[in-house]
Image (cartoon, rainbow, N blue to C red; front, side):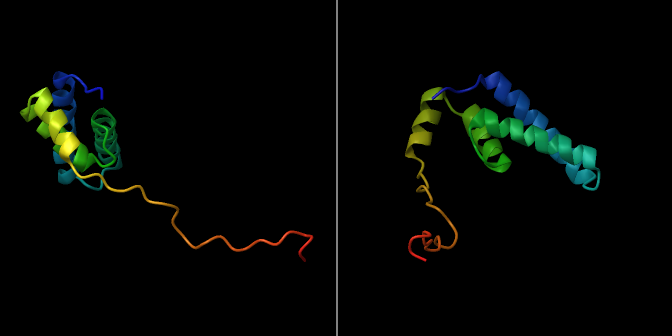
Length: 99
């Protein structure tokens, strides 16, 4: 597993938190919201998470811990099982020969 440099994680986490504060101060500003969401996406990619909040939490844990401790913590975390296909079952399709 490749991990980003701690300096880059710290920089992106500061950027995310700063835009979070600005967005909370003016939630109707679309430009601010877009920039906040971009910073969250960058943090998600950097930390390998699907949710910005999870990525921010992971970044904080990563910055607090040593590399070995962080990797061990990631290995010990419960994994969610892969979800199969969702939705109604496919309808039986008859071929022209059956009709």
